Length: 534
Image (cartoon, helix red, strand yellow):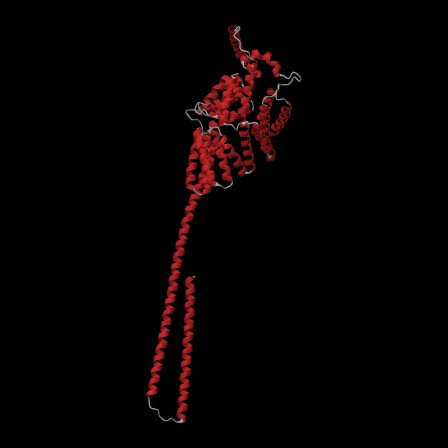
């Protein structure tokens, strides 16, 4: 196909899939199928691509091919919620309402937060009631049972053959083959005898589907308008017309709250989600309680009130019915703790989320949980552990073919490596500075010690000199005392006195010069000491 290159040019799968997605949005379902098929030749087991091709077949009325692709998407992972939903849709439009109801319930257990499964359950249950009739009206008898069974079988075969030729009409009616014989009997139930409008249950199902479509397509104002209008209409119905009226009203308040959330009107969103929760608690509706807690947590988290979000979601944790539900709850709680700076608790919740994801065998949530753990470890400063967690996340992203996740994780790993390298450099520089400081201190201490030793030496020499001079003077005085005293004339005495005065003056001058020299020497040594310290 690619001139000997078995794998094809790089990026071909993404190109063909993107082209198919674009054609699907334009309503070119046949061309879209061709592009999806080409993409699947490159990656035959891509689950998302198989689901998308199944949707195209469903739009063209080919329920068999739609069901085949849906089942292929579940071949390796029967908990793939998109595949479960698509299989339920294919079964529903084939007219197998009972089996479609089974898969809607299965999907709801896997992903209870997704509204499409709740709508599917309501839709399938309503279709079963409309097709088979109310159980209360059935009277079981054995009269003419065999003949009646034979007639029913014959009618089913005939209508089955007719159905194969008129599949378009079947799609327009959205009824199974075995339901056609009830058409006239159900006509009265399908319309309001006074207004000619749809019966209450049919109207509610139709409106909920339109609300869901508007929400998915980002038309939040339209979703809000339809939800409010439907809420007012349902309030006008009696309990006999709508037996599950409270449940429907709770669901509509949830829809209104979701629309307000996406429009950024958090207070109004909280108001309606609280109504949903209160109705669930007052009427013992576990599904409404779980949904209300889930949505309230989302509103608080979106608004930045992470502490309140944690309180709400932790209240919902004991209500978790599956490992998959637990994994996203732990993940969201952990992310809130990460936002408020409680990194250790964030890491603990990330690890719990990862364990639950492994139990559910959901690689997507394993990836999310691993990234949360890695981010928490970065914040805690445990960079080596963070690098290991990011490496695990990268392998999970590669196994899922998630290119954007791979790119983001690689960038995060580069940042962590840079921090590790910077940390090592800073540590080495710090050690070098400490070494230099220690050597400088030792040099200063040595210089100070030398200065002190010199000063002590000079002081000792000075003291010795003083003692020697004193001894000489004392010895001289003794000798003078021992000499005989002779008479002296006044002239001689006068001459001696002058000589004595001169000698005293010379001694005083000598002492003054000696003192000045000592002070100069001391000042010079002080200057040298200060220069050494600098």
